[in-house]
Image (cartoon, rainbow, N blue to C red; front, top):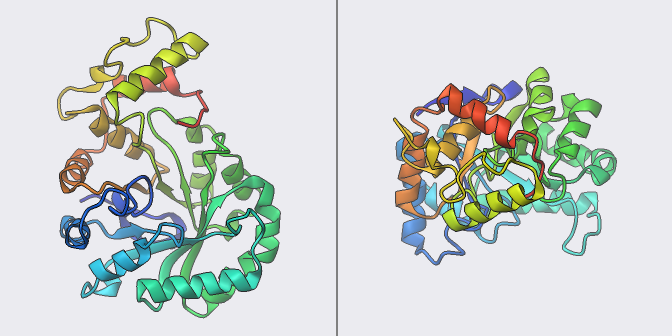
Length: 314
């Protein structure tokens, strides 16, 4: 396993980290057994994965992680969780709500502290309210030793231009130790401003949802590329209509998914890339892809020319 430094935290994180959200939510949405959930977690540990990302919003993921990590020395892994700053009705939660949320996460995770506490799906329109009202709560927990580092995950589904990340790093870069953002073959715009700002301020970047949905489905990928051709976002003859990214498969790249993980890690601002599969076979494939996390320079440049300026949620 390759390890990188998570920005100013100084934490050495595995290049592949495990995310318990996404479509699978650690197998809760795919119907795998509790034993298979534990096997996934143990496979991660045995393979050198040392960062586990979760959230109060991911069903029972915090409790499942606690069960799967039972008996593993606490100092041997890095635990990141998240709290929502809005309630389910979209109303700003109170500071007391945030405090209860953090305490409840610690109980579910069965730990005395988390390494990283993040505001979940951070949106720029709430930025200054959260900094004023909620950030002091996290700071207090940090002073109590219950949180080591503070960050947020972006709301890429709404702000695929990374507006919230840029606002945070231009306004208060010292507040944020870790940020989760989306950067991948079909979503490269973080490289324009968000990632350079993170590197400038030594903020650790966790790459989330880099290989998901359309990149892993040949049918959906064909349809997306066809749509972009119709919209004039890429030239008609830029890539084949059928299997539009199979030209990436050569040498140590054995699939489009493998290429996706390599591309997601092949930026100096990325500390770690989340994988959230509930399949042990897919997990093994993703780990194998990241043994050599680079693409051929010509392929990487071609991807950048094709998709580098497309800022669309997919």
